[in-house]
Length: 117
Image (cartoon, rainbow, N blue to C red; front, top):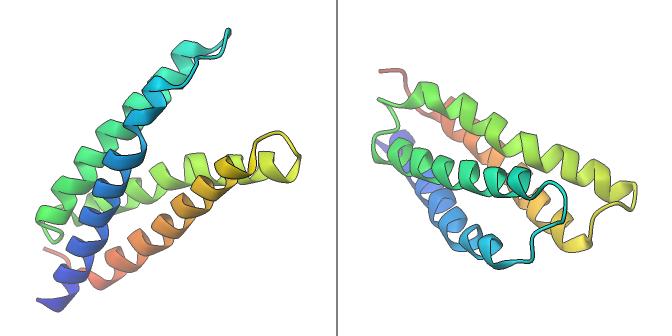
């Protein structure tokens, strides 16, 4: 089914992207305050990459997880871009935030294209 194949490609690609870009964050110098928040964010984001992989394995079965996946992308993308407009984060952060917002849109497209079980 072509609709499920689209969702499979979107979610599996997102998982691979996340597994590529997130682990190096464990190697950056930690902030003096809030290190646990930073590490918790990275860890939670990595866990969601496994969720994306699972959704991509059977998009029809796991269609309901696509909406929380959209929110997972929005909770970083939106605040990071707002902070960027205020001059409070670096352009590289805005770049990754924009990618997350693109993935949120793609996840919505996948959700709409995937038939209900």
